[in-house]
Length: 380
View (cartoon, rainbow, N blue to C red):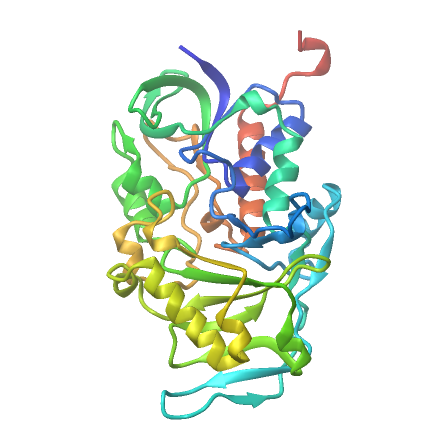
């Protein structure tokens, strides 16, 4: 039976940061089990087509999940990005924004405003952060296509059952388990035998998963033509289908606009992607002119339809950042061997990228406090 000292369930940002921290602190006996076929979790990207004859470029990669971070008040995430040698830049905000209030009223321009502190982005999108962490970790310890289904406590650890895409089961053993999945997804997709304490399970299930009810649309263009009109690319709309829109252009790469859907998840579920994309293109044309109706490429990502992110309970949440629940059982057979480290468990930044880093740091500290790494002379 394959085993590891520490099993990490989920290869999103928190799971990879936890593995990276363990590796740096001399703990190499860890394993990451990820249900998706690639790492990243809620950090996902859209690769736009390159110009004919041009090599594939990370500058044509656009975020379908989280886009921004604020290093001025999220220093741990900022330090991680610096340590990994990633390049950042400020969100483009220069120019007027467009406001669309109703079907019977033409969109209007108004003076834009700058965020303070500025919203920052990464060259190559947030996928560059996942790629950088992945490169620094031994690939054989990150197993994708392994959906953990069941957990059982042992006298000295935990047994985990996972399934691959073909339904083939594998059983793993670990002394400690770090849950890098949103709390609600843990209670909805994992079976615990015996069950978690009732109050804790209820608290985890009541914790909204950030981004789960949301959907994003991205349209890619040759040039940011809206800037020629003195527009920032930012817009607000009460008409929809997108409620909030921003410039997603990558310096040195393709231009792009992206928007968050204002249509509820249960309504989107009844519409075809092609129809939603057509409505988004028509909205961009209303806001930014006819050139916006014919992007080089476009896509949408509906996180509410992603079973590795959302449950049907998430469709009816308001999408607000939830208060962080307790991170581990305080009594019973699961005490001392099970810790939640997804972003929702962060006390300061629940749901944010910075929250994933903070929760991973706290989880690794807890694990090492329970069982410190062996001194160098004892490792052989």
